[in-house]
Image 1 (cartoon, rainbow, N blue to C red):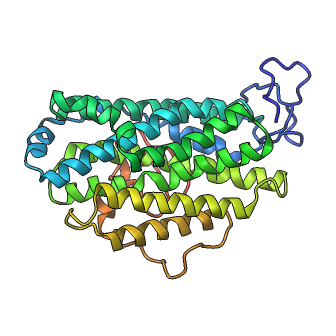
Image 2 (cartoon, rainbow, N blue to C red; image 1 turned 90 degrees about the vertical axis):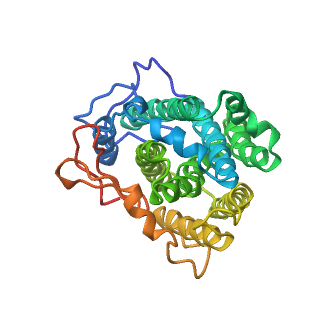
Length: 344
């Protein structure tokens, strides 16, 4: 694949000629003239969802943290370490993807995503610096180097990203888009559930509030790559190899279950190896169906953490809600709401 030209006087802005990839755009942002209406709608929603973590008080969380069990502290610290890595690498990776996207309205939402990933990284830093003892903070940032299971988990996704940078051909681009979709739609959510479980016991409520906001951002990112996969496949039949998609999903699910059992295991009330497997496979099935593919795991049709939905939902102005388990998002209560995209 060729990186798009930044200055392209010979580009064509006709909607008939516009493509997600391999197009010939001038790169002009004209939101009154878009081919992919869902991107325009999503851009306006994401812009209405601005927030900053420092608005959330973490004073009580510091007290709560000292009262967690050792298992809960280990899970809390380890999950933060994993999330920090994910959003740090994603902040750096998204612009690399955007360099090859030739639909300006898609570039625009990817730029907002990059900003949001940076806010997420700031949020984790705010949590760590506000709650954790000074002597353990560097340990959290460096845990991914020392924990073998976490390192392998991070290496899998990072190497796909790096391979595309080293060799940006069609095959590696297809893999990196699927990897982005997996990161945004599978990798975060067992960790999010842990924080919601603590909140269900009235612990670490400030952390849960921040995770809820991050959660909603991530759902918009799920929609971005979900739609991109479908649009690219529609414009370039056979661009994605379904066998590779299923292979990548299987690997992601295997690693998600292994990591969650490693960092949480059966030591946290409300989370077991069985519920972790059931939830992860159910979620993978839902994400596959969202891109038009058949479910991978027979018999995994229910969400075992359905009872935690109320901790993932926030009542916004005008009773606007966001439901991450079902994959629909509307607004935050930190900003004025914009219409949602329930059709996705």
